[in-house]
Length: 189
Image (cartoon, rainbow, N blue to C red):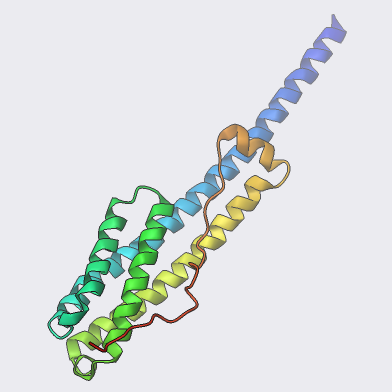
């Protein structure tokens, strides 16, 4: 009888110990996953700031840049794609399209002295530049917390628990192919 109680006691202690270990890993994954979600929200906040500034910049330059309607169309299309994106990966692709079109617009604007001297355009450009810096900072922070999370669900023994609890690796921001090249703009008609 006494031997049976000891065996039951040991089994109960093992189960409690396993419960604590499982619970500890689960809570750790939840905390890190929420940190990644929070940082993604910060990235999206900066994207929204960018998307709010772009129409003002486009409106301020549209009259002067009539022949550059293609760039304006690309910016509008990319903004629409972003609005309809459901996943972080789709949103990243849409923002990369915005960045590409915006880079072409900025190169075009450099070639129009009347825009460079326009105070409204200059203010919008300064705000957009600040926003681009904020986007860069928030993306870097996102990559940091997402990397920490990804490492925690990839290391032993975390990898065993992560699969059981349904935690999956998060996508990191990476440069698009060709991002190292400056956009080419031909202003010759």
